[in-house]
Length: 101
View 1 (spheres, rainbow, N blue to C red):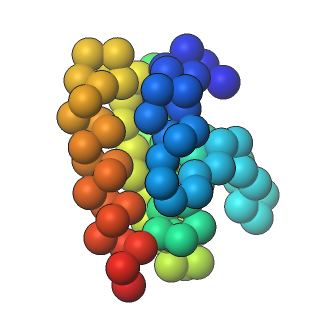
View 2: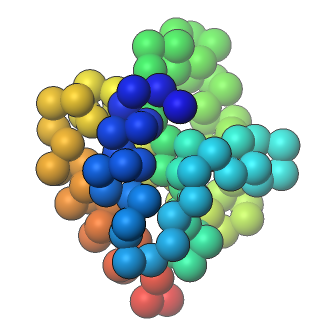
């Protein structure tokens, strides 16, 4: 895990009241974090995701995963570093909304 992934895991997701898994295989992709109850994938994106190839790969991956009824929630590493509380609030809100369905 990257330092940002570790931060999000150890300081928020690991003890979240609804089970969240880290580094979970879904078909032939590895999700950074996955909440099965909310059908939610949480991805943290570093610089490689903002190249032309990275953007295309992420779009293809997201479209593929959405076919399973999953939502992909993306944050940048900078979001986690500098806006950690906002990231946690956004994740919490989406999990609670989707877990009710």
